[in-house]
Length: 253
Image (cartoon, rainbow, N blue to C red; front, side, top):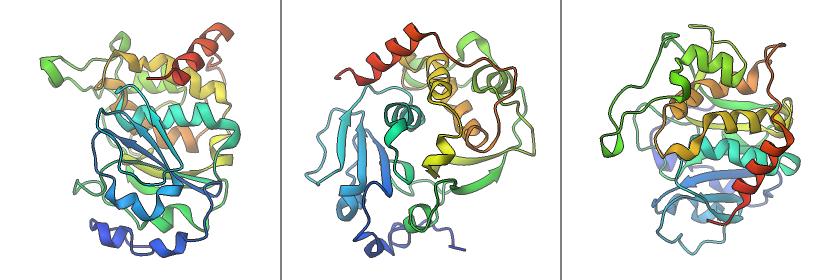
């Protein structure tokens, strides 16, 4: 088993193993605002960058460079990428932020552990037990002195039941802090595309950069990818809502 690290050199120590890797086998999905992305230089051809900031990207040969509105941090990007690429996902996709290892509570395994020698049903991440109260809320003041609140004033427990459709199990469920994880295409496709569209629509990311749903989703993604949807949960959006969402996601910034 690989060892976790807080050092960028250790994270990239086996970068040469990617020399013959194709983006169809290992894709790195990066959410970027104004970060330099220097760490991606040798693997830029495997990187799809969702650029949410005004500053230009470095002149690296990225797989794709996609400008998007600055809503929802990297939490929004995960759903966006899955919805738009559901039928042509890489064998393994690693989701990450533009800055690597900038927080002591978000350590990582080496990059090759997330992407190489994987199978399509894998979920890989540094898992932690989830012990938040079912009544967990983000109530702190954030950007521009605005208070971060959820749609319909939901607690985390209600969010899991009503938005994700997978009830929360305190001290049983797990999460990956920061949502630095890789996932196989069959693991994603174990749930229909309409499910991810439903979650996106209900979160209403367009309300701002920092909304309570991003903290909820960070804690819920592990369950979304590793547990079954509740049998009675209704998640398929009407056709017109699906069309509206796709038009929004594909609109040029």
